[in-house]
Length: 254
Image (cartoon, rainbow, N blue to C red; front, side):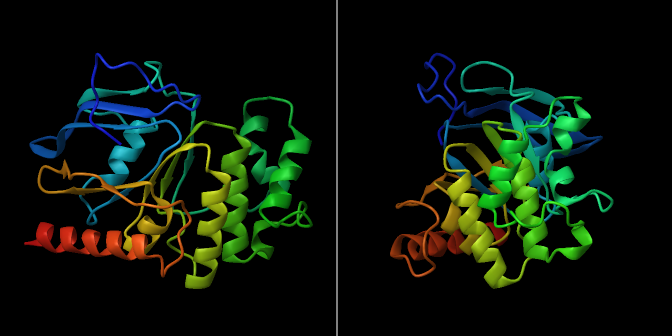
């Protein structure tokens, strides 16, 4: 992750990254953030942290085209718009209760009146451990299974950019770790921006970590975590980065 440079050529990575330039968000007299500038390289997994209400979800929604900024712009690192190249995964699994697992995973295609790619959907369901639950309704699934179905639905879209807003926060510790591992594996070739409040989760999954803090909010210097995600909880690189994150949180709280 690095500051944008207009004259620099885009990354040669086939997966586009995200470029945010001079992004400002105001509500009346209240400025949430102002002149945010950053770039996520293609194929990087970046984790965004910060206190509640600082503007993380608003920033993610603007990048995803779900909200409008007061000023600034968001493009891919290839200079093209990011619209139609993003899959968004929120805090809740948002499975439709009257649709079975297969129908939920393929919902986007059916809403766009596209032919459902049954082979791809079945492959994803096998990969997330739901291969024998195609026709099961969400009410019959555990929280972890529902979250895995949501991951399959996100991956079904084949989008190169994935935005995730605390998607594992409702899971118990063991299930959360398992789903983190699965997400890290299956999103390894995507450009990912994940919001979390959990320093451990951030250090397990991210290539780079950034903290949004202040009023108006500013982005701190990125922390690069050595090693390859998903990292073990006792990984020395993870522990070092987690300590640095906690130090930043304490400093920002003063």
